[in-house]
Image (cartoon, rainbow, N blue to C red; front, side, top):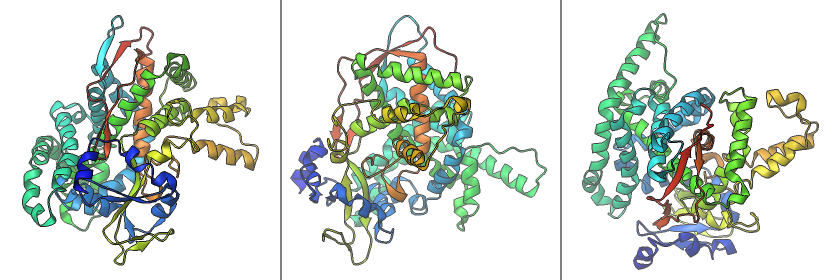
Length: 499
């Protein structure tokens, strides 16, 4: 398997494994980083995601794949994922109240990277720019001002986010008995970049801990809790029996683990979206269509960015979902590790022993012509057309100001739900880029909000020159790296609204 794995490092793995799952067969996908993974056909997705955690575990899989005992600098970060609960509960609930902060930080970051020249075109390195924009915007939500604009923090958060998967890949090359010795050495870059961040983060977190404790003891205190990840994490940590969880250092480590999960995935996604939109034939009118939708939404919302307004951006949402479908950076969907002591037998009779990694190949699903018409074509409005067509059949005149669509019958409600399920954040057995089932990506609602706002700001404020050809990414091991050095040409619009 070793030579096969080495050959596949730079191969498009969707082409390698597609002949098997797409024909209803399971196969073993070799990996240079381990013993390989059993890839099951799409028909087994429901079985896979419905298994209880004591049979198939995503947490155990991540412990192994990301070597989190070492890469996240404290084993408890992943083994007791308090920060994941904070994302699921607090971040998701607070998204509507954070929209103003997000669009403000996006505007600052985009203007800084794209410039304000209204006359000449500016060539922008897309991935590098999006990485920085997404990093500072994510940090605005995680730590607030002024740390989100601290250059040393942003630079080292991005480097730490790069360190985690790279050090994990190196560690997976070594046997388990060597990792306690090799681990601290391989993760020296992780520690260095964490140290450079934590010297700014820890004092702020400690001050916040002290202020929250003081207010809890003295309800009359004038301290007003900032609405950010630090505050949410402090409250979550107070419920933890392990007192170390309540320290500023541990909260800081969880904060960077959250940043790792948020930054690169969103930066890669928006890089692909911009290339897909810029490379689409101009006659399709994708950029113009998204811009018209955003302008119409802002007019209806009296110039305000709101949760209700974002829900109206179905074309923007569709352009993002379609890019994830066709230009996603991973070829695999939901994956788990078998943890049942006696293993588990699938519905088709395949026995999977304890310790085996099992997953679903997502590319055969997302490029299946039986599911998606012209499956290999980027159609930005693939998912918005049926949504807009359904809305247009309803009399919304009396509810237009409220953004409410009257549903006259049970059938209407069923149809409305069906079309709502075409949104970017909705997972299904035919769209698994965020995973699927109860362990689908918990941060996808924040990611969708951030990316929709980013696209909206870009098309409102900048013209984007059409590309003659879409730059191609490079397969590396299990992921597709975006075209790292490729650029797009942008120019500030003279009639750009002030947002």
